[in-house]
Amino acid sequence: MQTNRRKSFFPIALLFIVINGFFLAGKGLLTRWGADADILLAGNAVLFLITMLSYYLAQKGLKSANTHAFMRGVYSSILLKLFLCAIAAVVYIATYRKAVNKPALFTLMGLYLVYTFVEVSSLTKQLRRPTNG
Image 1 (spheres, rainbow, N blue to C red):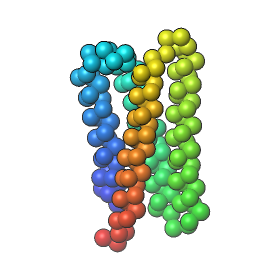
Image 2 (tube, helix red, strand yellow):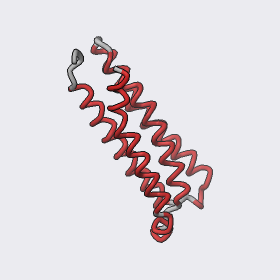
Image 3 (cartoon, helix red, strand yellow):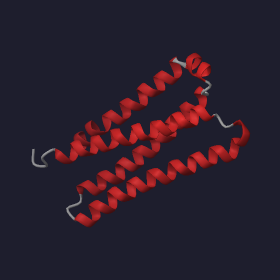
């Protein structure tokens, strides 16, 4: 069971590594586009940590035989991820006010969708796997 969890989380971890690699290798390109690579690296780390927490909550719900507990786990993971990302964005915007890097912020909004898609598809694959085998 523990191995299945690790295998199902692997795409999210791989996504984090690939995106960080791109941000580190493409600093010059990102600068030409007007995006701050440091903000993107920090934002990607925050998104990854929030996704880990959200994934854990959803997976806890998947293990439950009770339908209500399953729904609570999935909905709470979705809401937690949404609110934590919104709070992180508000803190960033309030801290930097006039120096907010909009290209980086919009890129991170897109990454939120990518992380959510990968998380949901990974959880869906895990849900479809037989529990006996």
